[in-house]
Length: 400
Ligand SMILES: [Zn+2]
Image 1 (cartoon, rainbow, N blue to C red):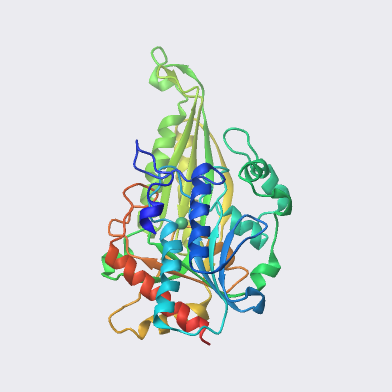
Image 2 (image 1 turned 90 degrees about the vertical axis):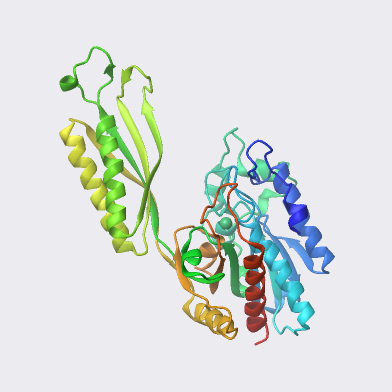
């Protein structure tokens, strides 16, 4: 499976993947999914939101066990984020068949469309639409960098955009959803474990900080006469780092826009975007409050006007506790496999589905923790351990 997937959408310049929603690379990934489903004699279908499904057994029977992930990527993404969950799903099904396990519940494998949001700027569009967390009106307004809307992009890829929207009947057939994913951090590497179970997805948010000063000549304006927003912004970046460190959270200013953006001009505006995440909402609130406090202090000291706008906040997602404990029990039977339970700062389709369906996640060790980069990696041994763990989980869930 990896041999077929590896060349799809790979940039020869960066070695990274550019598998954006509804592009040619995405179509190749989708064709691959369909081939895998049909080669195994599974019933293949595409739902109204363009998510692909492969079924063993009739999903209409209800209480289905579903696994899967996504095949799209961020710009110059790695090979594992997403595809590891889909490849492992098919491999786990093969493993169950070789074990000769009779399954009492329908088993589904899913590829959710546009998880990364690389093209239209919103993550998890396929699962959000299905779960009713993105309205049809909002979805129709999503536009890529070339001005192409989501419906037009779907249409160009040969999918009918007319039916997009909440799909509660489909989700109601699912009794449990388990997404396997490469870890996007080093917790498993540090604990020495191959596989882990997710406890929750950290709450996170994005805030825009506008530092407004006064544009002026970089050569002739005395330092004491300047209203330069850049030093106040720089102090804020450092304060964010300190606040996050003290709280055990993360805070990142990863995007900045400067006006007029000239080498020899004092800026009139520095606009920085803060992304912050923490294990709990209270910690996140504290960290952001501290960063905003520091920003106001430094802005005042430099004679700068500051506006802070909260652009988005996603509350904590707690995965289903009963299902999580069930996974721990099923995997705990294998004495060789320790399974730590860990939180994650990254969003996933599983986090979206968790509001409608009992949902759990398995993580596979990533020795460097690097993700969203061509350097993303998982060792073959660990991937095999992940498939075995997923097969154990699916067997335990589907035999009840
Ligand atoms: Zn992912």
